[in-house]
Length: 425
Image (tube, rainbow, N blue to C red):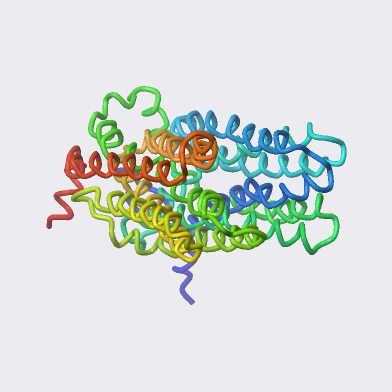
């Protein structure tokens, strides 16, 4: 009997021969699962905020500070983790991110001893998330193309990474909230479940192939971003104006909408829960469409996402002026769509424009700008002390129009010429 199916498959990729074993042609999936579980571990804390306030007596300022220290760990990890993975490889950084996410959950189990374990855990969770989003996102892209995956369509890596990242951000609060409300030991069980799920993943990810081979790793030391003006210019021209709206749309949909719709009364908590489900759910479901909208000939995917965010803001403004909670939930759905479209569109642009030695770095830059949007609910709440909510939303519409104009003006500029030629054929 022939054993050809068990043999290795040597293939050429960018001028080098790489041996691909049949079992590794779906290697992208465990790498993408690492994004989901790290995101899960980071976001489940959000659903436990009420528990910490009620059971441990933590003040609002204390809880808000725990959210803030997460960002303190996240941003440097995004900026440095991607660049470091370009220079040293993706796998060991992804493994470290999973392990650090587990350590963060171990620390947060110590909430009965006070706030220090929670602060330490949140800081570690921020670092783990930043490293995973920068390194593992690039890894999924590389494992979704030849020679590791010869059947995927162009752009599959961005869609897969975005989908699993969004799924993790959604599953974390949902599962954590269910366990905190209906299961025993709410201060322990959500974190313990996450750790249990991560243990087998560590062993699986450790067996995946490294996509940045030794001969390539030296490139990142010698070819800085300035030597690739097309990627730098297109990033600044079309990706940077769109990136903050990735999470600005999401947080507006599930945090701002429930806070600004008038007349909800005692139903505001239930309304907020529904807004979260609609926003995050549609953010995941819309992502296959985002891939179909993408083209190498323009920034159509990012323009569509930013336009959708503008429509969401207009719908929210109408809901505020009309005192219409149902219309507010429609706005949440539109914001969720904008979040999914922009997440996939931004990653597709980056993965198309970036050379192998700068993919992680540009991915880190993209997510750093995207996380600026997480400040939206805080900014809205701060401005609401002096400005009416309807005028704040109108101001956001003006900013969104500015982003739309910048993307439209630069949509066909600084395109990767070799891909344009292939697409034109």
